Image 1 (tube, one colour):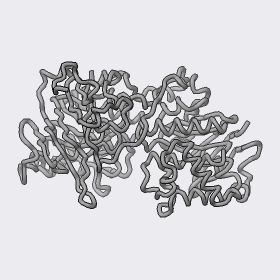
Image 2 (cartoon, helix red, strand yellow):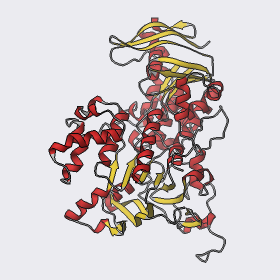
Image 3 (cartoon, one colour):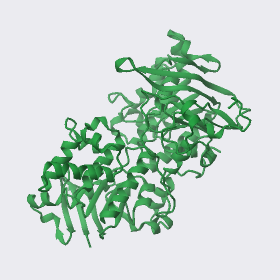
Image 4 (cartoon, chains in turn cyan, orange):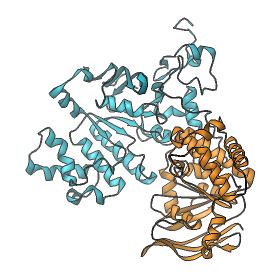
Length: 326
Length: 262
């Protein structure tokens, strides 16, 4: 399915370490590789602290990676500087988690929406009102909202403004960092429907960061599961329930489905997510994995393709041929 | 009947936020209240425990707990009730803990406030409770400050504190909403286990309908300050009657549900 699609963004062996007290390093992203295809939604899931948001900030060039490359249409964004870097930002735009904090409360909606365009000198002042109305129309809000302030809007309406602002520059990639997590389920559903519609119309590529597995499985073409700075499994969205990696399976078992009481067994993972400060060698999931073996403590598994469209990083799932000679 | 709330109305200033809420709870039963933000679910349980914020007040109705109308309680009676026979778990237990006192000293202080135990006995009691919540290294936790624990651990400490006097009624206000799925599963299961042991009745307020369905015997769906549907959880999930409940259930994402993109 993805083979005939055009790759638009690749993340290649990106490592991000943050210095912390006493000269130690915190590894937030540990050798992450990903690719995003044109018109596709890539969901990224994982628990808090797994490095999802750091990955987004790296893609948005808000952090520079310690090593590795992030290529947009073949151009390594991490090597750009100055005006070329600024221009490159037009292609990747972001929707933030908390719509109440993402805007300047003293700016009118029409100024918020046209700010990105003004920044790149793509709009004249007299055109601003009309453009704002167009953008409002795209996110299904009434035109009168142009003269309002973000303070007197509901959470869902504000998130629509967030999406409209992100799309003002007509980017090719939209990054949503927990864009619906602060909303009620019914509002969330409407925002998702809006995003899916806009994606179809504009052939937009999306990276959708979320901790709700069920939601991610319903809106993503592909899903990347992260644990402790590593991508442990990549698979198609509609087959999430057939995940193979022990961590993904554990995550799935921890979701409470809307079913009759006692309709399903909900199992929880033992222990806490280890600190990313002192990572032990071997597999990142070894301390909580129910099936951990001696090999897992010695050697870190790499992300390998199990079959087309489904890869996992786990020693248990190694293809029988034993590529690495183990 | 352990708790019986009839025709409860709550106002903040002049505005009536909750209208005509009726609910009842038997010993050991679990009731879940679901609804969107602003539907008044938290207000209902805060009214039951007499802790409405600011200018909130009960403007009508009755709250009978073990046969006594709580609305006629004196301050001294509230003090005897809250924290022992009726307790509450909040969304973020970190914010009820004193940030500059160790878990142990707060826990012991709390136990001794409500009982004649000595410091040593109270410490043992506290450690036993932490063990019951499956927290590892109870001694270490007793010596830790709240910020040294993860969100999930703090929440389990909150539940342990709420359950130490084997209350008849536990009110839980979004106890797992700030947690990851794996931690949420852990906290929910441990809370259920400990309440079943002590035959504690629970009212859980949540917007996670999956959690509500898993935990509760009875379910109440609220919208804009009123109950739109109430009954046995299984019945409502299987055959929702009101349009609003249907929409709400329909909006919940499900693993393996209809894909938006294929």
